[in-house]
Length: 401
Image 1: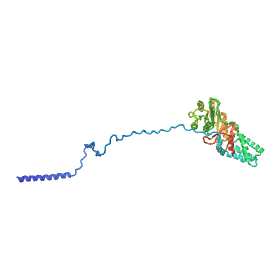
Image 2: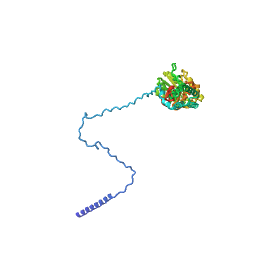
Image 3: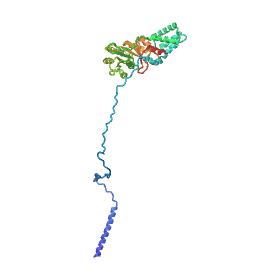
């Protein structure tokens, strides 16, 4: 009986061992991957860290009292950078008009040198025969002195050389100077009239053909008047050129003169009228009116110029009408001058670009043609290169030292 029980126990142990080996071998076998299931896999999020989970171990350091804790300071106020106050632009101080032509004499002499030196060279010849006198005439005609003035000058020189017998260089220079001054005229009033004699400002109208530098001359004339202590109002009655009013206003702003202007293509007579009206209201000394350049052959434009003059005269008398001529145009300038003189009463001539031509005799010719004096001459592009005409300084520049 005991032996039987022992045999059964051994058999059970053996069966259990064999079963364990089989199960272990099955666990080591790689199972094939299962097909994806349609049921979504739910991933459980990690648990949120609790307070103190990642805290560093406390350090042993002394605790500060409340008195030792530094409180944050009061924030500084932002720095405000003040923009500089932009005041009115500084005004130009024009050069004094007295003696301007003398200061510009060297510039004038460079362009007129051939006239003066040519005449002195011819007069200094040992034998002043007919051929020499004809050369003197040609020199004067080339310089645009004009036919009649040239004949008068040659006759006067011939007579004085014959009677006085003057042949020294200094004597001939003195002789030529005296005769040229006699032709130009030294007893003529060449001041620009800016005093009306009534309670209105002096009114000056500037006229001329296209391209003579009329607007620039008007601006420079404002500088001349300001340099002489006059207050000026400018009237931009040239409404045909878009830039004319802007250009004139720029000239005025440089010397503190206000510019009255209107819309482009507006009525020039209306603007001229308003300019004089503003001049009266401001108590200005002078009102300068810049008119549009116009061809002397255009009858309609010339008639409009007459209208501007008539409208301005409703305020009071027109004190000056200055005709701007380009000295480089020579005899053609005389044709222009005649037509303008028929439309408006020219009272004075402004010769521009006189430093750019050797034909300085146009001064004599235009005065003889119109019977009015040259009052101002332009001798460069600088702001103060418009000078009152001085016959003595002009002749001295012609014949040199």
